[in-house]
Every structure is written in C-alpha cells, then in structure tokens.
Image 1 (cartoon, rainbow, N blue to C red):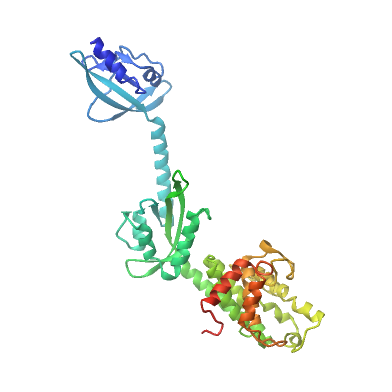
Image 2: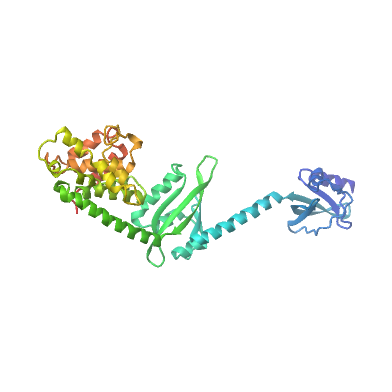
Amino acid sequence: MCSSYSRIQGFFYFYSIYFILPKKTRKIIYANPAAERLFEGRKLIDSTFDYAISNERIQEFVLNLPNNRKKIVQMNAEKVFLGNEEAFVITLVNVTKEKMELKQLTKIKERLDLALEGTEAGIWDLDLKTNEVFLDERFAVLFGWDNAGTISGSAIGKFFAIVHPEDVRRTKEMLENHLKGLSDKYEVEARLYTKSGEWKWAFISGKVVEWDENGKPVRMVGTVRDITENKKVHFELQETLRGAIRVLGKIVEKKDPYTAGHQHRVSILANKIAKELNLPEDRVTAVAMAGLVHDIGKISIPSEILVKPGSLTPIEWQIIKSHPEAGYEILKEIKFPWPIADIVLQHHERMDGSGYPKGLKNGEILLEARILAVADVVEAMSSHRPYRPALGIDNALEEIDKNAGKLYDPDVVQACLKIFKEGFSFNRK
C-alpha cells in the first residue's frame, strides 16, 4: 500500500490542488499544501469529505469559508487502488474568479440586450480569419432574413451583395480604413436589401476587438440599426431646406445675370468632389447646399459693379471681396443642420493664407470650403464673365493643378481632376 501511495503522490505532485481519500472511509489521508491553502488552513487530514463524488464527470461545488465567504470549486475524481483498497484522488480548481467574471459578463450582456431592444439594433460578430459572421435574431427580424446564427464562409462578400450599389464603394472603403487602423470605429449609413424586396436604410457600426500576434485584426463586433423612418423625416426636412436654399440662390441670380446657373453648377461639381473624397453623406449634402448659395452675399453689391464689362478698380474689388462676409451675415441666423454660413464665409480662403476675408491657412479652412473653392474656380474660369470671355475648362484644370498645395487643397484638386478625366462636364444634363 505504501508503494502505491507513494507512486500516486509522485504522479499527482504537479497538480496544483489535490488530496487522497479511501472510498470506504471518505476520510482524507493526504492533502498537498495547495489544497490546504484552498481550504484556508482548515485541518484536512482525517477529516471527512462530505461532497458527492463521481469519477465520470467534472463536478462543481461551493466551499463555505469563515465570515460567510465562499469559493466556487471544480472537482475531478480519479479512481485508484491503494493496495487492495479503492480510493479517489481528488483534484480541485478554484474557479471563483472566472465564475464571478462570467456572472458580470452575463449581467452586462443582459443590460446590452435590454438596451438593444430599446434601440432595435441587431448584433453581428465577424471572424476575419474564417470569414464567418454571427447574426443575432434581432438582426434577422429587422431586415427580414431567416438566417440568424452563424453564416459560414464569404460573410463579407455576402454582406456587400445586399448593400445598395450606390453605397458599396463608400461602405467598403470605410471598412478597409478601419481595418488599417485609420479610424477608431467603423460607422456607415447604407441601404440594405431585404427579403421583402425593399431597400432599408441601416446604420452600421463596429470595431476591431481582437488582433493576432502580428497586430492583424482577427475579429470585429458591432450593431446594425434600421434608420429608414429617421431617414424619411431627414430627407423631408432636407428637401424643405433645399427649397429655401434654392430660393435664396435665385435672389442673387436675379440681380447678377452672369451668376445665373453658376451657383447650381458649382454645387453639382462640389457634390461630386465630396463624394470622390468619400465624405459622410451629411458633409456631402453640406457642400452641395453651400454651393447653391455661396454667392448670396453679392446681393449687397451694387449691380453696376457686378455687371461692369471692364476691369474693376481697387475699391470695386474690395467691395466684391466683401461678399463672403455679407453672405455669412445673411445665412448665420438660419438654423441649417450643416455649417452653411461658415462654408460660405471661407470659400475664398486659400491654403497659403493669401485668400480672404480672414487669410486662413491649411487646416484652419473647413474641408467643405476647400472643396467649394476648387469647384468655384473651375466653374468661374470655364464660364463667361462681364470683364472677360470664358477661359475654357482646360485652363481651369491647369490652374488648380499648378497651384495644388499652394492655393488649393491637393486632395481636393486630385479628386476634381479625376472627375473630369472620367468624363464629367458642366454641359451634361
């Protein structure tokens, strides 16, 4: 028996917590130091082990300690023989910390579920290594799909297959930027195709939460929320504001026939540049709306100056240069959801500080205003003016290309040049 007992002690020496008890007496005949620490100094040798024992599965029990403290312990029993006597080697694992963490995580999940029910958001969990995605039931219900649960293989491809064609590029680029670490979160609004055959607007947000040893993203989690109704209200409000902006634009065009159509064409080009730069939808709209009224301040300028066929005097130029500030004063009191007044104020600023009215430089100028500046110059140079004939689109594009980085934002210039290279024309209906 002593030989068997010694072998068992040696075999189980490396288990962190264990003790030995004969099946018949159920009294502990050996406990290693780790077991004594687990029981916090309680005398174990010759004490009876009262917990039910099964050598067929891992069991779990609560160990009661002084001062109403408890530990959660997992137990595994291995049947052995001490000579002819049947016994158990009991190995123990203290899982209190893990169980408490799991309990806390469960609470957090329950709270998250409640919060998501209130926002009607669906959860997704994407494995970037296997290209599998888990979709919860809310996700399926929101968009009329049957396949809640794990979708295996080509999950990203299957997702983009249901994204509206006009939204695919932007949605992909924003995802790629996040995976490259260029953005803290992945957030995008896109139209998704539903089982019922309709398009629904969705707000998709997510974040990389796991990386491999090389720092490569391996897992993303996030939510998808149906924002279709919000979008409808938003579009209706925008259309009302667009109507108001068009009216304002018409006012200045009535006074200056040479600007008739100019603001509209600038708005179209600025809108395309903003999209080429992959700006969020609200900023694209801001650029387009500002384009429609960027010269509204000219209503404060005498008509004889606006339509003067010859060269302007220095004083007349100073009056002309006051129109951004005049436009700002007109627009600042209107509560647009976009910074229209500030964009209009800055659309004649230049990257090197040589613009007006404030001589702002580089990042001091709103990106929307930098876009408007390029669109304004290109349209103005390619069109007829009272004091000169049209210079042509080639000269206009040469102007912005030559002064990219000096007067004009280089990224905006490249986007504009690309648009024209791909066939854009002011004359195209």
